[in-house]
Amino acid sequence: MKPMTLTLKASRTLLAIFVSAGLFFSSMLFLTPLPQWLRFVLLSLILVATVYFSLRDVLLRLPWSYVALIINNKNQLYLECKNSEQVEVFVQKNTVVTPYLTVLNCQLKEPNLLQRLFSQSILIVPDAMVAEDYRQLCVWLRWGGIFTL
Image (cartoon, rainbow, N blue to C red):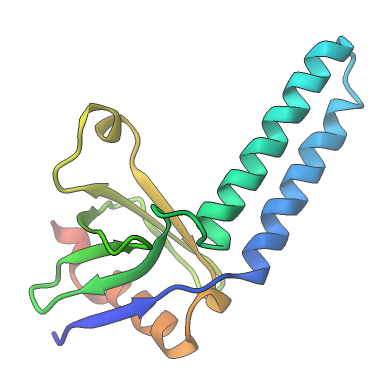
């Protein structure tokens, strides 16, 4: 297989999903009988999480945001961060590939203790990359033999 570099870009669809989820969970706080201080704390946590994950996964503004997927000729997957760091990962069997959403679950090749407990999940929607690149990624994930690792 020839090497591929699939570049990720900011996604309006994913941003709308993240903001909608944040607004939904924030509105649920006002329907539950909670003390004001707890409601404020939970609302702050929802806001911080929505902003952080939007910056990291959707807008790709943080130095550790993944901006590219690199597949070499040995069928190995590397994730490239915004700060140009590349990490090799193994794609896990619970990766989900659909025409409208791909959830790339992967484990770092040399993880530390915390990274062993939590795998990396990358949400990819079709507007996050060029249409042909998204199609190639879906084909590689489904038929490239990566689930036999």
